[in-house]
Image (cartoon, rainbow, N blue to C red):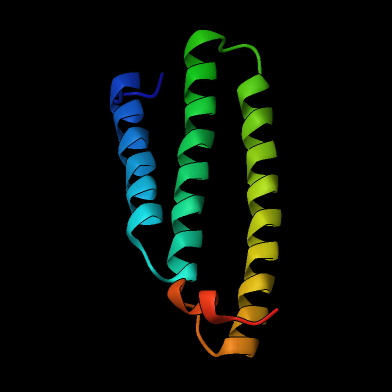
Length: 105
């Protein structure tokens, strides 16, 4: 694999990143913080695709293609979410989750 780093260490790191993202998604009240937590979750899964693919099938690039697809989806999701958050901020002058409940449609 990588010189001096085992697959267990990389998978441990990505598991920690994934669960930090889950924790942030559940506990945060700010929409921007929730978006950052979702990005952590997606990045951890992309790294897992690459590492597991490199470990099991080093000559095939399927994990790399999946991770590129995840990165493209994450970029589109971020652009859409930021647009929605900006629109919410213009309407209610807040990016807190609790303040979106009082918004009139």
